[in-house]
Length: 338
Image (cartoon, rainbow, N blue to C red; front, side, top):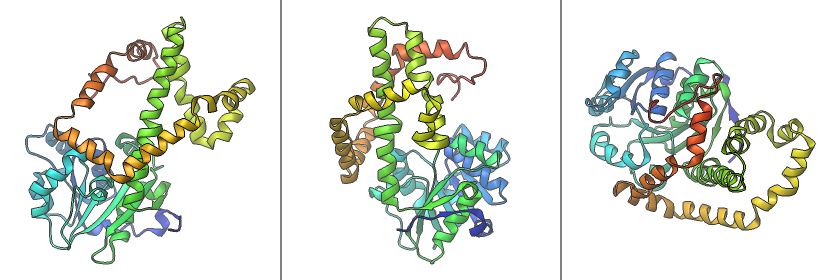
C-alpha cells in the first residue's frame, strides 16, 4: 500500500456535510468528534442512553441528543465511540436493527471489526477514522486550528464512495489540517495494541516504576527519584516529538548522550525484543483479544486488582504531592477530575 499523507486541499470537505451523523458515546473521543463536526457545519446527533450522565452535558454544549435507537435510525453515518469491551453488545442490541439500508458504520479503532466481535450487515459500508491521540487533545488541536493526524481505512465499500466519505469525516474533526494516512483495519488494530502494550503504556510505566524503585531502594529521596524517572520523561519526549531521537540527543548534554548509547541497550536487551515479538504474536493471533474480552465479561477482575495495587504505589503518592506544589501545572486527580 502506497504511503501518502492527504490534506484538506485534496479532500471533499462538503461530502460529510451532506450526511446526518450519529455519534454513539460521549466520552473522551465522543465529545471531541461531536463538537468538532458540529463546528465544521455537520448535522450531528449524539446517541446516548436517556439515563446517561452525559445526556444533559451534551445538550448543554449545544448538541442534539437522542436515545441510541433514534439517533441511529435517523442517520446516514453512525460512528461508534464506545469502549471496545462494550461495543459489540450495544451494537447488536441497540444499533444494528435500526441502521438505515445502505448507511455507513464508522469506528475510531479497528478492534471489534478485525477480531470479529462485530459483523455488520452486507449492505452497510464500514470504515475507520482513527485520530492519533486522546479525545481532549483532538478537541484542543481543533480549536487551535492545528488539527491531529488521523488514520483512515475502509473495510467494506458498498457504494464506492466510502473512502472519500471517511476522508471528509476526518477533515471535519480536524485531521485534514495535520494529515491523513490510509491504512487497514488489521494494521491499525495490531500496531495500536502493540504500541500500547510494549512502548506507550505497558513498557513505559514498567520502565519508570522499576527505575523509581531502584533509586529509592538504594537510599535516594523519593522526591529526587520521581523527578529523575517520571517528571522529566515529558521533557525528553517533547524533544523527540519535535525532531526525533537526533534532536533529543542534540539537546541533552554529552554526558547524557554517552550514557544513552552506552547503557540503554543493557536495559532494553535482545531478550526484551524477543518478548516484544511474543506480545506481537499474541496480538496477531487474536489471543490477546480473546483474553481481554473474556476478562471483561467477568467484570475485569485482573484490571481492577492492578488498578488498586498501582494506586497505592509510593510513586503515585509522592507524585501527587509534588504536582500539587507546581503552580505551572494543571495537575489532575483521577478521584476528582473525571
